[in-house]
Image (cartoon, rainbow over all chains, first blue to last red; front, top):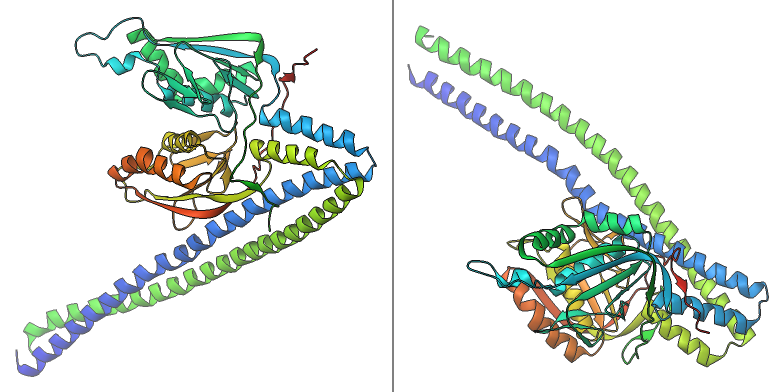
Length: 236
Length: 229
């Protein structure tokens, strides 16, 4: 091989390598670009759409109210109607209807050997999990041990008792809910907490007793004072 | 030329030719892909601008309706005490948007050992209620009595039936109005420590907040008011 040939071969190989790299680069760029742009556009679209939905819902409500004024209904009657409606939504009215009663209780048995004593007690998260499933199943009103569950209701474990609406609650916990029985039961069976409690009932003797009732009475909640929050108009 | 060189040179030439043709093909593919993505982008842009136009229109409609309603209310002269009671009830049922001092909690679980579960969010909200929060929202969803927080599919968290994932930047933003000191103390002691142990980034800021109204509906098909005689 003489010098000229050798350099020719070297040159050709370099060109080959160069082209190969360019090829790789191009391949890489192709995919990523388009995806990136769409990814950034999607969330903002979703947000605007969500906002639109909320706004049109609000507008509908306002129009309805406005229509009532236009009809010339007596203002006192209208205001009282609104007040009644708001009380119902806020859970400030005692209600009755068909639904479920669920009784939860600590086990009467004591943990032995390697058993975890915590798995023999009813914990706050079980109660919250059941509330969550019931609301998901379309519950219209819920109470526990005579305490109405409202927007502010906390279910907070404070040692030997659970604090609910600022009151001390001890087991057994009796949860009552008004709603369509099959929807409520369906939602309970769908979420893990109900099944978990069932297992604990079998293994450790906890109580998880559901009852279908044609009539449950749920007490009214109590109104709270507001010291910090002020009503504001939407969208300003 | 020597014979010995003929073979390598031929090979190099073949490889070169092959690469050049592949390159040309890729270029063609690239431009085709670019065209498609450009088309998709224009489609996307028109969808976005449509939705924004609708948003502006709805907002205009909204403010004009509010004004009309204000006028109508003044005309009939509704009892101010009654209106105050109504506002209080509507703050409770969440149909009234509110503003006031409070804390804003930003939570980033993207680098966490375990991402946040729906139950974790419920626990945080419960702690805020325990701390006496007057109004709470998460990613724009107002928390009311009937709020459910559930997992949908493998990673979507629904609050009030609406997905709260997919927001750019910080994954979760909790707003709570109430006594700032109490809210701050309770949340940082009872929740933030545990979250940080799981490599979740938590920052709490004292702020004047605005919490939107509940955009779901209350339906009463089974529950009827008990009339007290």
